[in-house]
Figure (tube, rainbow, N blue to C red):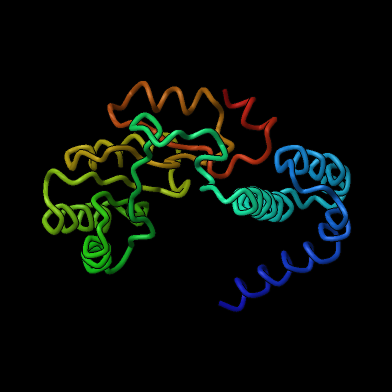
Length: 215
């Protein structure tokens, strides 16, 4: 908790000392343009400080706030502001996350009571724990319920293949970040081609250029 508190305070000071002076007085009616301009103006200092992670996290928070503010000012939901029309083709199903590695069943049932019908839980704590959690979760929520797993970059290529083969019998909808975010595309392609489980990634890829490189 102490470490988390220190990191949060550090990011708060980044906002106050660097971001706020650049934002005050700027027109806020174009969230996309303002976000890109802010990134451009802070690019060099980000490199000089070697602080890509904290800067990207603060940028993400500011960007979300700008889009939220734009939607509120227009009196419309954010999904409509970014192009949604309310039809089925624009509907995004939600799921409960943050389950595991302990109290998986209790957490899932609590989220079921809130109306969630899909769940994602954390793996990467050893085959015995992962398989036990998946067994218990399947028994608790049923065979037809959608369940995803998130390894949080816990495995190398060989281990990811082995662990995913063990968990495949539980029919996960997809596995998130089985490999480190900066693993080569060849490694991701090798894993994908050897498994039937879809892969999800990108959470820890930072910046437009990095995403374009992944494509």
